Image 1 (cartoon, helix red, strand yellow):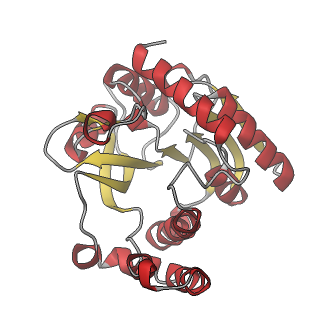
Image 2 (cartoon, rainbow, N blue to C red):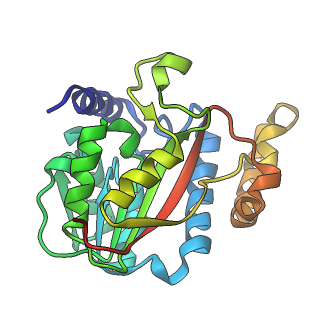
Length: 264
């Protein structure tokens, strides 16, 4: 295993040991309130953007983490294969999937480039995994994905991208030991194109809610109610993100690709 992937495996195994049982607090934000809002908002946005395309016969999820997206997506598909580089995270996901009684989900501890699967998939979801991988691993992993998709298949990728015109390591700008690497969106577009995927759309995963911006002047109970109410507006807020959303050096985004060609 390459150095970048080894760092990511160790980092996420450690998070798996420390994270809250619901797999939200700590994985998304230092605030449990904002974590709950973000989880609800991102899912509303995804349904709004993809509609009927968010379902099908077979789903391949790479970067399943503790299984929060797996549990939510699985009822929309007949069969699901979910993988993560971290055995610790896969164990968390297994606990969640077992509690939910989802018997059509297969969980695998494997990196994207080393994943072994059978058959073709209608939808591939890359869950915040590409920015934890090195460039060679991404290229090899996309080759694996391309080998198991046909023209018309949907590839949805949730990435944190650089907004400063260059690639940078998270630790370089924000400190800490998170090994994420943030690349410009154009880098991903070109990498996907090499493997026969064309980008159709991209959008922020969510817009920071107004209630959260006013949290210093709101009692906790009122803030909680306001966040729940505002989550119902998440899709509309993202549709108007050019007015409401001001990305910094990095930005959390969904990318929707379609398989258009057979690579090579």
